[in-house]
Image (cartoon, rainbow, N blue to C red; front, top):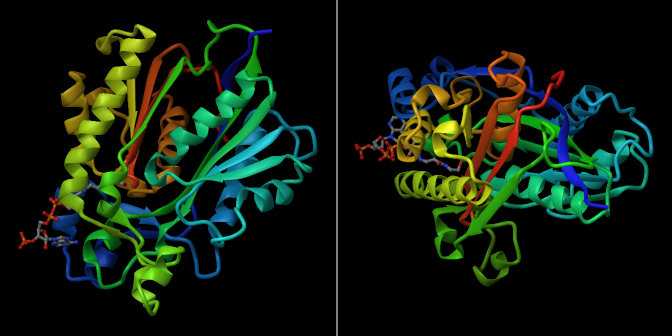
Length: 337
Ligand code: UT7
């Protein structure tokens, strides 16, 4: 029997502490004006000390299950996929403990490491499991606590990144023409750009580099080069997907790009030939939340009523690796939690 994967639930969670540009300007050699004009970010949320990615993932996962009218019980889903750059530990993966804490039983559970593209990669694997008949329902989460890996000596990354989590439930449906069905996914990578977004330490390469240095555990990014790659790669991936599924670009109602920088979102819309107003924006309120960025943007826009049922939604993300991806769906009638 042919099956398709459809969006059946959506939820998100932000840690309560909201950090303003004004607060950061008191700590770093920066200004409210620089952050706002160069990035479009006004606030971001940072988790309290001791709060880890798994904690945020549990909250968002719970909300997505509630949105899909599913219980916190074995049998609710057949797999949990967690996209993150900031797992609770280098080993084991964070997804199994999230599944256990949600009471979902002994389901398949694994992490996806594709940095800011992680959620699109996770959607792709979860959807493939459903289409292959390996799962009926999958909980897909993007969750991050970047505040745990930001270098306090790096004013650029410290003002950009935020913490948060967003989650969706994908569910098997028998036909492709239902709202919510993932109509296609495009994924790509270019490992020759590895150094542009890098945490140098904490992995097996560390041994080859001599004595570990605590600062090697911090996130690093070559911002200007990443900016150009982000626009090119998201634009290319989105266009390739639109061609494949036969959507004319102008038919896209909402462009949900990775919320890295308002200037990137505008440049992306321009590159695709879409009016800027079609770009969903919440980077101003949450900053760059990496793998949580797309589901947080979806949650915000759906809760605000921007994503009306029946509208054409195009997702695209770009991140370390380098990695990128895009996905498309007709927005379903969802109650966001
Ligand atoms: O999530 C994965 C994908 N990530 C992205 O897509 C991020 C892409 N990159 C960006 O969004 C931008 O490149 C940044 C926001 C990271 C940086 O913006 P930029 O316009 O590329 O700035 P820049 O790095 O070229 O720096 C311009 C100036 C420099 O000063 P000089 O050399 O011109 O005197 C920086 O030292 O801005 C300075 N600067 C700052 N000034 C005040 C850098 N960070 C700050 C800061 N406050 N926080």
